[in-house]
Image (tube, rainbow, N blue to C red; front, side, top):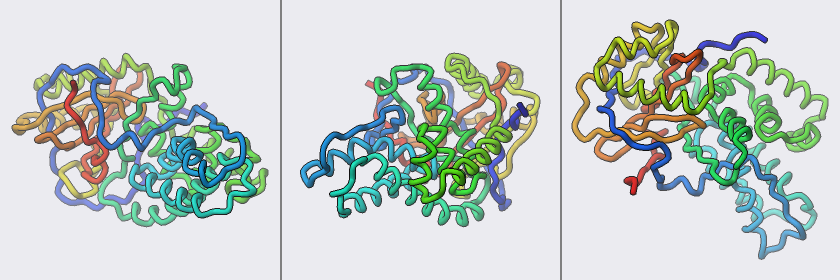
Length: 353
């Protein structure tokens, strides 16, 4: 099998303006999973449950049926679009169509709703692609709080779900066509049969199999091969923060791979590097420079985003930036920094109790 890229490179045109710095605070000891988030409850992500519904869908049950399927629809839309707001818009539009549709002949609500949502997401993605080509700097997906909890008790299944919303995978999916992406998401993340996907996309099953094969090969060729052990990622994240915030350049460099990359996403709306920074020395010195003098009112919290540990930087209680790492062979291979304020609005946090 061909080795994946060391770090996925967003396929985006870069318009160069003066690059700024992302500042990091001094380390605070906070346990993982200690946060509760406002505004995230309606954006549940549950691809494990296969919702069934017995009996006819009536006026009295139409809302209940939709809400039962909302997590699945949300999961499809987010993986298709990489933005929470766009996914929520698509799911809301699906609700409007569902609530006004004739449901007398609907025998499988899940298939009906997934079909509506997927087609809406494909249309939305086509609209967004032209805008993203003009995006200032690299594009990264919007950070998503992932806590599968009791809904997905199996750890192996949790690992599969976490991988399907990882930053590395979502960046690679950006290089697929809308139809390829839809087929890949429905097949690989949700396990939908080819026949059902064909009906959803109004294509023949043979065409869907071709799309699936092409998408799978593309993802396998470009997807980096990272270590996914949660404990190791958590440990390296904590050491990464301690070294940067503590000014320990030797320790920080020891944590970074020789060919490490730092990818920053600000959309031109805040200070961040607008080109990908490459090499152990350049990434290390950049991180040391931005962590040198943390401003007052800054704090840091650990949480799980896109299936892995992340650092949420708050300034005066408001989300300022998100740092996340990918590792391979025990060292950091890629550092992701999201500072676009439009992509941080869902991370409205409450103080841990």
